[in-house]
Image 1 (cartoon, helix red, strand yellow):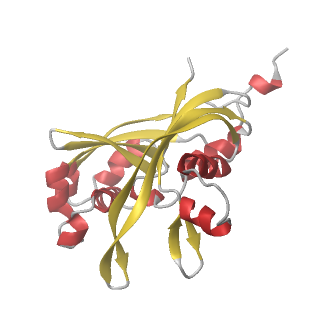
Image 2: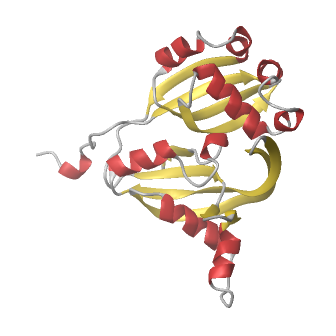
Length: 237
């Protein structure tokens, strides 16, 4: 008899997508959409390129995996497979078609309750306050309990665990953190703000496969449309 806990859950399966973006051509392709200030922000530039090339937010969340010889490799979760992405790319402006290539897509293997996986994620751990914009989760924790002891790694790991719905975090670590300036639209112009960017990794156990699949397909933290919040999963052995 088959153990019910080992059977894959039903529900949408996230599609892992890999794309290549030739950065100099991408800059030329969207120069008319962004000011000189906007072009300086890598996250804004790539978000604009992907959105215009595919005719919408079909790859989101995503992350920049690296840049080599002027070509950026992007990983993300897509709503459609490679054939559909390439078809939509064929309707983009010629400059964007030359700048962006869909390398491939593949659905994630079916997730199972009790499955143990390694994960990594680059996220923006901020909390949105009504009427006050976003605030670093660490500063938010300090304001909530000024007399308490607040460790950045503990705060960020707790922030991650609270949002990783459908999974239980067994191990987590803060691999790095930096304050990063990002250009964002404000009204009719542009403004540059500084956000915390954290690299976290660890091991999790899938508790609710359907809910967990929906969680990673949506992404974690803030600024998910700009290259943050993509959860990369790998086997533990």
